[in-house]
Length: 180
Image (cartoon, rainbow, N blue to C red; front, side):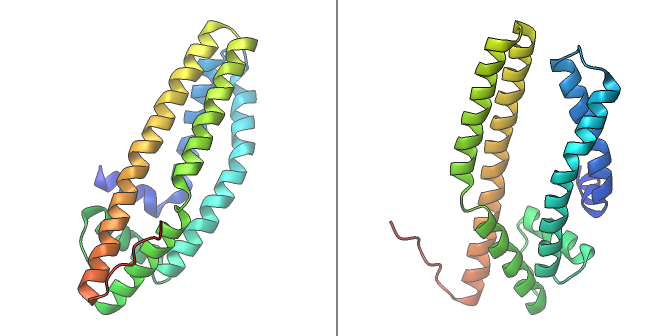
């Protein structure tokens, strides 16, 4: 799994190429009345916005990690394993990356609650306007997606907090507690 993760992190274009048919397949399973070509084209066009966001975030992370994809990949691997870098330059790059990710995810609870509300509203709208197959499919997809988002988000946040604490402890800096 780590090899696949490393390969996909290195080759962002492959993530995009694989996500378009997967998203199209989910849409076709939920709503089989549409033509496959139309769904694929619509998903590809809509994905352009997501690709732009990912490219911008990735560029910022590369800059924080030292400017290259390989340094970002190395730091991300160490972050997942919980390995604190030993070299001072690498420690500073890790600190910058962790700080950037923690800052970017500071509103994750509110965003997740809003997303859950949005999906619940869409399931209700689907129940009113479509049949039971579409409603069941969309409800199942929504529950799985929001559940995965919560579990994975909590895991990533714990990893970031542990690395932040480890980097601060090794410098002898006490971590500032948020004010209540």
